[in-house]
Image (cartoon, rainbow, N blue to C red; front, top):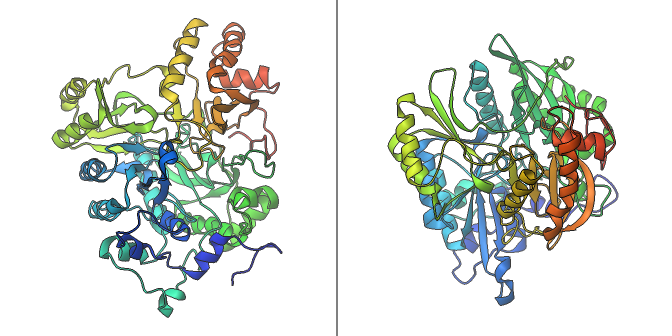
Length: 572
């Protein structure tokens, strides 16, 4: 039996990983069983390592659970080839609910998949040369990177480094290929399977999920400091010369549990590119060896940093990577967010940023986005890049094709100029109800109407064109990163939300709780006096988040707070 990190007993997840280190469970056997539409609770945990969540339609629970599956693709840096995009579009129609959901980590999610469709869907993804392996589970998730085409060589170098790290941190079990490509159940009694030990993760993988991101200052479009591991590119003369290492970020928390809290990453040191993989693996193995395996709510790397400190952590990384980290190089993050409309890269090719409402690519009356994108990719073959804010870019476009692409999009109700209001373009929401089992309140289904009401309020107080970063989640796990938004809304109970204020546009400061439990119908009324006062009293072009931090929360807009439940690490 595996050892606990304290006198407490290890969690059940740790026990089942130890008992079945290949992560195969009895998944293939259940797939072949027509008598059931669901997997056992243990297999549901193993499925996560394969990029699959077992869910049910919570709108229909009164008539019995209808089991459905969410399948998440692993797409480093959000890069999708034209061939892959067309395959995903087709697979969503054949085996899902005919939508593609862009995640806040630059992946695609397929929703509404039934058990019978899992095998064909994952084989189709495999045949497109993509994978869902390790898109979920106690492993490194999708590696994020700046999606905007490079203005110089740095962008391409960073994207290539992100792919290298993603490959280096993949688990090595053959269960994924056996189940989803060969369609066979691994022999659980085979000593080779019982004794399998992943060369990086060990026999029981990580205590919880692990998240990695790359950023190129001054743009912090990946919200880098919210990740377990962050690489901040340092450039000289248009070339990437090294990275500042950040570690210990994470936003998930639990209501009423002060031992859980959002935290921004610490800056650890600087290193040159040849050490990238050893450093990445060193940070991951620190989490593997010191993360809490007795309490999954306390199992993220951020708690290791919060309790042991950055100096201890730096020494561990240096010893494991076999290097000495240099002092952090100067850099500055000035903003986050996506590019919209037509832009030009350093190679002279064009790219187009498109707003995707709540990240859901679908066809609705008057706005057939899914059909429009499919036809654009079929005819013009652009590369598709998914953004951390759940939008997308069409890249590698010949400038001579701009008019034809814009015309085709317009025929389906998709504009390329003023695509949405500033506040709508800066928003994010998690899927939440009806499928997420953790959701306490609505999110994706509420967000469009809530933003309409917020737009009306902004116009009413004279702020019609104001950009405010608004993020909404149905529970405190924070999948849409609400805790570093200028205005964060977090589900507390059915129809009730916490209001958080005071994040900044650079995503280098956490916000703070302003109201504990506000009814959905009262959210805009609660914000009206705040926004009216902001419009009257802001200093120059002061942002709403900075004004809230200064006036409402009573602190300097750049004031740093020690890590903890209401805290942030120092701003970069």
